[in-house]
View 1 (tube, rainbow, N blue to C red):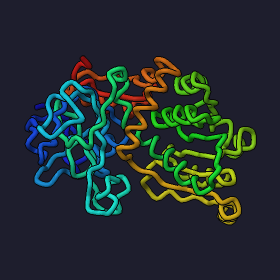
View 2 (view 1 turned 180 degrees about the horizontal axis):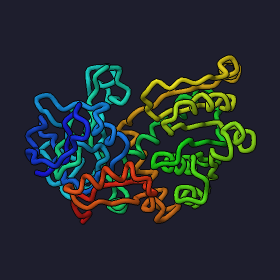
View 3 (view 1 turned 180 degrees about the vertical axis):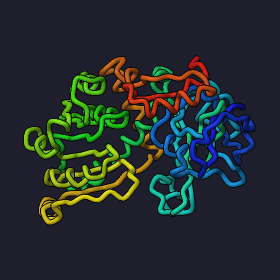
View 4 (view 1 turned 90 degrees about the horizontal axis):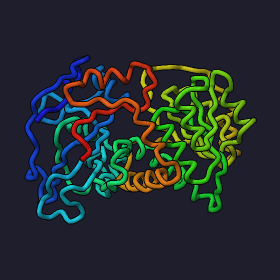
Length: 368
């Protein structure tokens, strides 16, 4: 079968290759599911792996098939699979179990292992291919009515986990009733997180660099989210005018904003951080004020990576609700389709083009 892969550790090694078509017997106990890949989204992770910033091939291989944002249709199932059937639409989670206690109870996204297994990222092949096989427990069924937006499920799950963790932590307060939320970053993740928080009934302000009008700001306004450009208004200023913010989700990839968010977070508030930053950037921060505010205000800051099956399942429910509340809005996020695996250069190029890209994805095969 055709697949798009890299040679980990070798910059700009992305290429199209022939790879063995997977089979059901690769999964023990009759629990295998063969999936025909329909669409695969790409993001900064794929760009960074191709730049050799990280990523590792599965044992015994010198290449890594890219792609962690999957959407496909079941071709066949093993004889012990009852929850899925041929023709079902599915998405696959990304993490696979390691050796920690958390991995053993199905929370591999919470692993304490130094080496972890992520499809299309680290030590496991991804989905940017014609087919993949996986165990049924790592696949989540997507209703046919959501097939046009199913490729959004992976970034959706990341937002779901961060927001879900915030609510789980705040159970400590017994009567936590958040009213106002801030989302820092207005890419795919920020747009989806803003939508989720609106569905929860919060007043949401989203922050991005560009000045309105532009597409992302318009999309936020469509669902009742206020957009603020940090070119004109700082987070502190907006907090005075629109806050205080009970929940802040930081997803910009610009680490200094984390400390600004900590500084303006409301009492009894929670800051959830999802962006992964490299480098060695250093900034001065009002350390005493932040420390005092966290102690006297009972504030919480939490990091959140990847997602569990439960987060994917919640994502399906929220995508369904979003389609009912704002028909057609989700499809507007799918801005840059690329047809065919052979056009992988075009696909990756969208990640650096800056031409209004929200979500670029490969149309590996027709939806129906």
